[in-house]
Image (cartoon, rainbow, N blue to C red; front, side, top):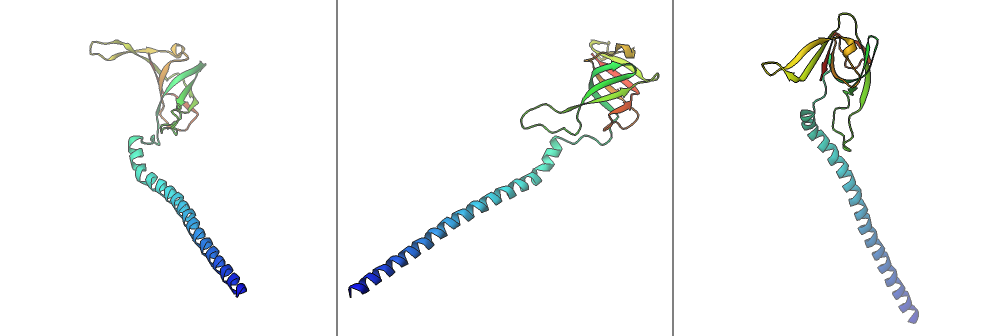
Length: 170
């Protein structure tokens, strides 16, 4: 009789332990599954948000054109018939999250005898309020000058190009 009580108690304890193990495993597994599902949902939500918001980003920050015939730049060097300019990288047009400045690149504008040089002086205005313009020469172009260099060819991705017109803004 005593032995039957011990066996019954052991069976009851075993059943309780198995039940507790099953319950804890179910709850913990459900929690892990929920976390995994939540992470997958966040990733999918980010992807969906990117797809939905991309048209707004494109509207606010349109991509540069595929054909570029003029570049606004700062003169780094003017040696011989070549003006080395520093321009903003056209492919780096979106704002940076860390607020760092845009990437820049050096380009070489090769001038020749028919290249026109113009000084646009915003400090002096004509009678109509427009900035004055004056013809200058290559020797008047100095490092640090803000220029717009024009070409007859697509210079979007060219590191060296022929300059048809150079406008110096002061």
